Amino acid sequence: METESNKYNVDDLNEVVSKKLEELMKLPDDLKRNKNEDIKEMIRYYNSMSDKVEDRRIHIHVSSLQLLAISVTGLALLVSQSDAMRTTALGKLLFLPTVLIVGMVVLSSLISSLLYEMQSGFRYPFLKFDKYGNQWKWFYYGNQEILKINRNPIFKSKDPIKTKVPYLNGLSRFLSNYKNEDLSKEITDNIQQLYLLQVHNYFKNRFYLQLTVIWKWAFYAIFAIIVFFILFYLCCTCR
Image 1 (cartoon, rainbow, N blue to C red):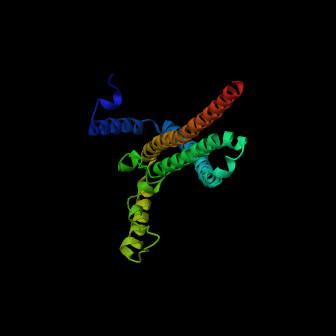
Image 2: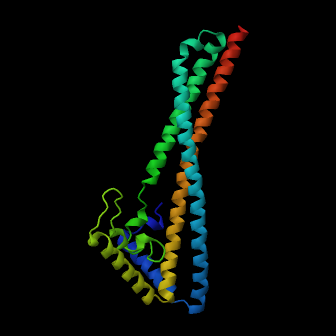
Image 3: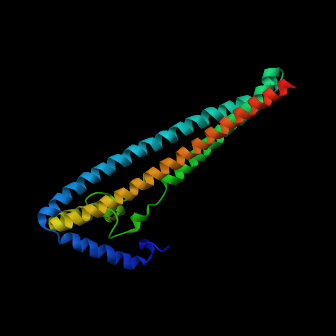
C-alpha cells in the first residue's frame, strides 16, 4: 500500500511542507502566540525526555564496560585454573556451565559496547537538511558559520580564517536572524525544531531499546544454560 510519505520525491515533499508552513503563518496573531508558547513548552519537554533516555543509554554502556572487564578477568581465571577445578567432582560439574555463562556475558558486553559506539556515530538524517533541519535559535547545526570553526583538539588552529572569522560571521548571522524575526518566522522556526526533536527522541528511544534487547537475550541464554545443566545433572543422578 502506498503511503503519503513515498508518493512524492524529495522536491515535491519540500513543496508540500513549504505550503503548510505558509498556511501556519496566515493564522491570526493571537492564535500564533498561543501556539508558539505551546511549541516552546514542547521543545523543552522533548529535550528533557531525550536527556533522560540518553542517561539510561549511557548507564547501560558503562555497566557493559564494567561487566566486560569483570567477565574477561573471570574467564581468564577460569581457564588458568581449569586443571585444578577438574580435580573435584563439583569442579567438573560447574566448570563448563560457568565458562559458558561468563563467555555469554563477555559476548553480550562486547556487542552492547560496539553497538553503543555505532549509535553514537550515527548521522541523523535531519543534519543534511539546510532548510528544514536544525534552526538557528536552538542548535549550532542551524548556523553553518559555527560549523566552520576549527574543532581539532590535537592540532589547534591559530588561523583567524578557521577561528575568529567563522565565529564572528556566525554571531553576525545570529544577530541578523534576531533582528529580522517576527512572530510568523518565529513560530515556523520553532515548530520545525519541535518536529526535529521529536524525531531525535525517536532515535534515542530506539537506540536505548536496541541495547536492552541485547541484555534481554543474554539473560534468556544464561537462564537456558542454567536450566539445561540442572536438568542434565538431575538426569545423570537419577540413573
